Image (cartoon, rainbow, N blue to C red; front, side):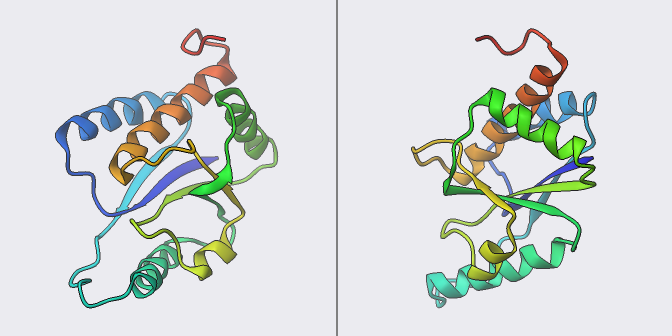
Length: 157
């Protein structure tokens, strides 16, 4: 199974890029992992929030194939523990899913089309974080899930 993190926009802060790189490199020992950054929209000042979501949604939908399992990182999603998240990833592997795509949208969330295409929604917290920080938090959680699966001492309960 391949795991992809699909994001709208680039990570620009050096300290976040450095942290993301650490965990992406660690993940290579466990699972094929890819971070894909879709380009930010240009000239959005004249667009409504809904128009921005629609345009970002179209970019996301172009990247998603029919057989992909799509999980949105969304404030209204379920909040699994790290152990439960690890169990979910194991379940996807056992089901034979070829590709699981986790999606971090833009600042206004997702278009209706993207919500309708999604197989699941998860949330990392009830708190709000910048989209750039969420990328680091999420890749760390995928790494943590992989170490839990392998029984390695990274995660403590």
